[in-house]
Length: 86
Length: 86
Image (cartoon, chains in turn brown, blue):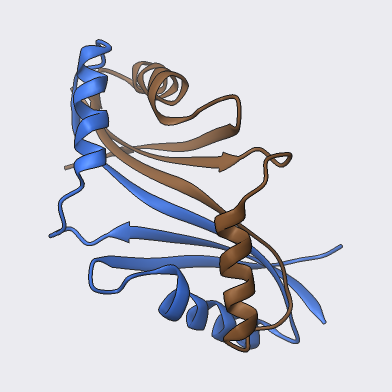
């Protein structure tokens, strides 16, 4: 089995409001950091997994994203997958 | 002013337990996805901001990470910063 490392990014869809992001944006302005045009908070899920080949690793990650990581009504996902050698 | 885009990754420190990650890991196994060695959930914060130059943008992002985004007792952060042309 080969080892793979996936970094999955889960973002709120652009049409979905992000009140936590807005709160941080306004806190930034109180902190004196000006010039922030947008700020959105998403999730970063890092997975180390075993698979025979890249195709199998991709299938596993896509199934996980689809069924467990993202709520597809309000979120989009993408991922980077790379093989890691021990 | 130039436009910059920062992708900030906030991760739990390796010594900090991640019960939500463990719950997803065990749900993955119930879903039939085997071979997951580790799964950790972090935050991904995407910021678009204006700054005169890259150095100023970096300073702003580091201040935000330090003071607002991450809880440095339990979390680490890193970021990618790039200039975006309209």
